[in-house]
Amino acid sequence: MIESVKSTVVAGKLKKIEGVVQEALDDGATPDEILESMSVAMDEIGAAFQKNEIYVPEMLVAAKTMQRGVGVIRPLMGGDSIGKYGKYLIGTVSGDLHDIGKNLVAMMIESAGFEVIDLGVDVPAEKFVEAIKNDPDIHLVGLSALLTTTMDAMRETVKAINESGVRDQVKIMVGGAPITQAFCDEIGADAYTPDAASAAEKARELATA
Ligand code: B12
Image (cartoon, rainbow, N blue to C red; front, side, top):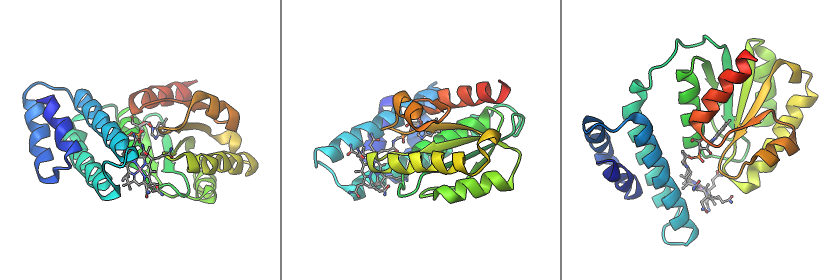
């Protein structure tokens, strides 16, 4: 059953995904297992795109299919009361339109007890700075980048936060497929995690440190 979640995302069967996810749940699969199999599906899609076996439209349909599938398990994520650990500002950096991973991180962070403020995609550095300045309750910031070409925008965003006088107010977390711990250290961010579940754990750790 869980196998058909993956194949339905890969095939971009938008109309079928909700039913397939529900069947997998009924069959005993956990929301985490379902998320994992949808993420594996997106990796397969990325690999097929790289080999020119599929093109942007197919990638987009697969992305929409995953997003719709995530919609089915979202209400099941439950979790701690919203806002218990404070506010978490998140966004995908300038020039980058990928948001599935960022949305998953936002969802997990919210379930972990934060109030999430999501600035969306293609967010200029100044917008992050402005949001932090306007809300002293924001103590954590998450930056997402999926393209090697937008890693620079991530660096610039950290720099802008550093230079704006609000760096002491926040801890900065970074993530996305091309991001590594070494890159995190290089640009002066505070934490990197490879996936949404570990991002939520790290956020709690930083909030209670
Ligand atoms: C779906 C997709 C798209 C969709 C995005 C739709 C959407 N709404 O997001 C569309 C079709 C729009 C797209 C466009 C493009 N894409 Co694209 N895309 C992908 C694909 C297949 C999947 C990404 C994804 O959603 N993965 C699933 C999620 C769950 O994983 P994730 O994003 O990595 O997130 C997890 C972690 O990274 C982490 N994380 C993410 N953010 C954060 C933030 C924090 C704070 C933390 C702690 C953790 C964290 O947690 C997440 C959950 O576990 C990838 C392939 C891949 N394997 O990544 C290519 C890929 C990223 N795309 C690629 C390319 C080239 C493009 C385009 C340039 C194509 C083109 N020629 O137009 C454009 C660029 C558009 C732009 N300006 O952004 C390349 C990038 C190559 C590179 N090295 O830079 C990839 C790697 C495909 C490939 N193999 O070639 N893409």
